[in-house]
Amino acid sequence: MRKMIYGGLFLALVGIGFGCKKEDSNILNRNQNNTVKFDSFEDLHEKLQEIEKMSEEERRAYEKQNNNKSLLTHVYEVYEEIDMSKLLDLEPLHKHVKRYHDILEIIENNQGEKEYRAIYSDNPYSALAGKNRMIIIDTMCLKVFDDGLVITNVKNFDALNSLEFKSVEKVQDKKTFHVLNRFSNEFQMKSGCGQYREQRATSGSNRTKITIECYAKGNSAFIFSGEVYGLIRPYNRTLGVWFYAQRTITGQFQFDFAYEENGTNIGGLVGSGNTIVKSRNHLVSPTLAYGVARTFPIGTNGFYPSNYRFSSISSWGTTPNTSNATITCN
Image (cartoon, rainbow, N blue to C red; front, side):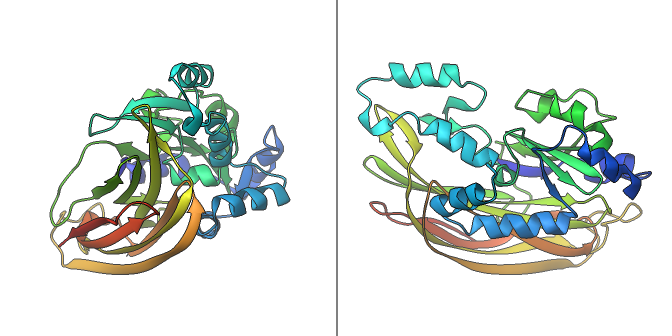
């Protein structure tokens, strides 16, 4: 799992936000028929939280009912074309990954183990974007990358849509396209429990993994906030390769998100104010899925949350055949 870090969002949004008028909405009809649209960032986040509560079957049925298929469903469908439980050797898997290298890969995780993964599946916004990886929000548009999000004015929709690479690191035109969020595999410990934690519970060829991360974000109205993203994912292993498994997932995301109150505007001194702590406690009811994700918006009165981090975590996830994967820190 990747940790999301703030990527110069204020300056990016200033550069692409001023001058955007509602008259730009007529652009939305040009070559964008298959792109999901939202009137505001608030609507987008509300829909994301609604979808996160669905099981794998429920989400696919919901999409079919609405004549839609999310990027997440698309990559999972291609992923499961290989029945890992029936493999006698890895040659069919390697051929499948080579054929669909744009959405599948075999990686080495941070424990030196091989994992078969679906690209974009760890980005929460893949559950909203379509196969073209695009989302329109009012006069802005986003594109989902494997390691983050890129935002621009909707008048640049076709140009953003044409970017085929998977990583935000390859974005060259920094004046037109701006990285809204960027993921990193590196652990950055500021204080307390840091910004990212993960834990695994392994029993033979079964595994449950839980990750939790916090980051800063903003929208086109320059309103900043914090956000926490948690994911519980079950795995199986065959022929030495870990792969996603659908099992019934239960768990709990409980944490304290801390940040400095002052020094959050351009003229302020970073870290000069009182520490504010926001607490959340959410139970995950039994859900049959490849993974259960939860996104928690954290209001910070519109200011950038300086020195954001977890001050405490008490979270766990479990699936049949493993013990609890537990993250405890304070």
